[in-house]
Structures are given as structure tokens and as C-alpha cells.
Amino acid sequence: MRSLCAMLAGAGLALLAAMPARAAIEEGYVPGGAPVPSTWYGSPDAAAIQADWDYIRGMRPHHAGALTMARDYLADPEARSPALRRLAEAIIRNQSFEIGLLDDVARHLDRPPVRLGVGPFSLALQPMATEGMAQRQGFMRSPIPGVLDAAGPVSARDVQFAKAMTAHHQAALDMARAYQANPAARNGFLALMNVDIVTDQSQEIALMRAVTAAYQGDAAAVAVEPGMIHGMEGMAHHHHH
Image 1 (tube, rainbow, N blue to C red):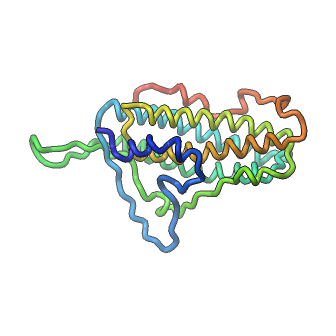
Image 2: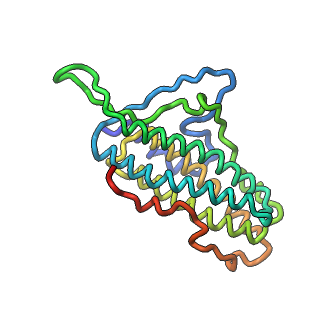
Image 3: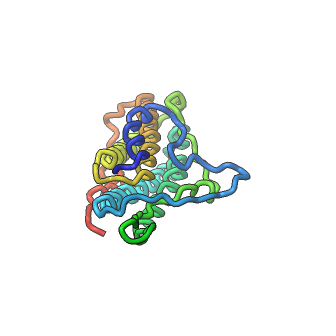
């Protein structure tokens, strides 16, 4: 049976994507609070585990590509938009943390199932994720600038970054929605993480489009070469583990 978390996450995906909501998972560090990590378990079904591996092999390198794109942009003296510079910094911080979560899920999937009970009453559960990583690492999500923050100088390099990262984000939305729609995908932790990805990256796309619209030149004439969009090769990775 599909987990309740996964069903709720799937049902709420479209609604939450339109809202600057609190994080669905790993909200952030509470100063003074004790880290109490807990393990998520799910079905050891081979198809479910394969769905998780396919997702990780697509999303993990894709997130890593966003980091290199953001760092390249911040290192460019032509990067002038204050909103996009803040966005690039938020992408580096937030998606670095999400890469750590994906790596943690991969480590759990490599572990053998845990058996509870004995004989005909035994139940096998697959470790899937660790909740509480933000508290353990002292991580706080960086806020994403809103559309109203788009004002300010906009260079051709800003438009180029916005157009490239928008295409990059759209691919992440496609991956997240494909996982939610996959009947074999049952990892409730990844399902809730996808709510965050869709919420954040939809808001970020709106910001980047607003910055592009504020450009005084011809935004359509600003070229984006395919090589400027990093981490897309993982999307076609569906080899078995």
C-alpha cells in the first residue's frame, strides 16, 4: 500500500507549488534543540527501490549542476541583479543540503531490509531515509527572493543565467512530478522532498522570469548554449543498481 505521506504529498503538490509555504520536510535548525534523527522505513519491493534509485540518479547530478551554474554566475563580474545573486546563493545552500539528503537515501537503500517478528508473522521493512538531518547539521534554509525583489539593474549575463536556470529548474519539476505520478514510487520522504522542490523551484522560476522582463534590452536575443545548462545527463540514467 502506498504510504499516507506519499499520497498526501502527491495530492498537495500542485497547491503547494503556488505558495511560499514552509518546507514540507527538514524545515530547519532550532537553536538549542537536541538532534533526534529517526529512520524512515518502507516497502522492500524491488520496483519501489528501483524507482528511488532512478530518481536519485537523475536528481542528484541535476542538483550538482545547479550548484556549478550558480557558482559560475556569482563569479562573473557581469552578474549584477541583486535578486539573482541572492537566488544563486540560496540555490547553493539549499540544494547542497538536498544533495546530502539524496546521498543519505542512497545509503539507506543499500542497506538490507529489517525483519520484525518471527516466522509467518515477520515483516520486512526497507530503511529509506533519515529525518532530522537539518537539526543535526545546524542547517537553515536560505529564503528565496520574491517577484517583488526583481527590481534593480539587469545585465545580459543576468538574463542568460535566468533563462538557463529556468530551463534547468523545469527539468527538476518534470522529474519531481514523474516520481509523484509513478505508481511504483513509494518513498514518503522523497515524495515530501519533491513538494519542497516543486514549491521552491516554481517560485524561483517566477522570480527569474520577472528579472528577465525587467531587462532593458531584447531578452530573446540573449543566447543560452546547451553547455551552460549543467547536470542534465542524469535525467536519462535508468540503469539498474
